[in-house]
Amino acid sequence: MLWPWRSGGRLSVAVLSRSVKLLQQLAVEIDDEAHDRAFQDLLNLARSERLTVYDAAYLELALRLHIPLASKDAELRKAAARLGLALLGV
Image (cartoon, rainbow, N blue to C red; front, side, top):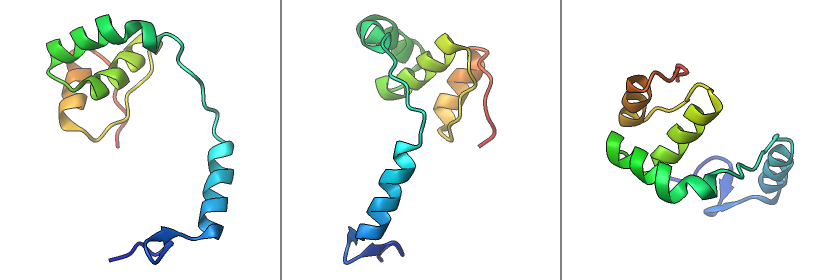
């Protein structure tokens, strides 16, 4: 089954153009600290909370910036709660 915004399995030019415009409006920030933390903090956090490094990266960022975590992943939400991190209801 094809998605309604797709034609023949590909994004239409109109949808692609609209998507690019929406992405350009996002206030994207680069986390310069993540690279330095990747091999130490992230691996330790992933190991201690039994998460993938991918999920631990989200958790570490939320913890470091003191911001709530938004995720539907049950294990990630449990880890966040164990560490006292606020969770957004998603």
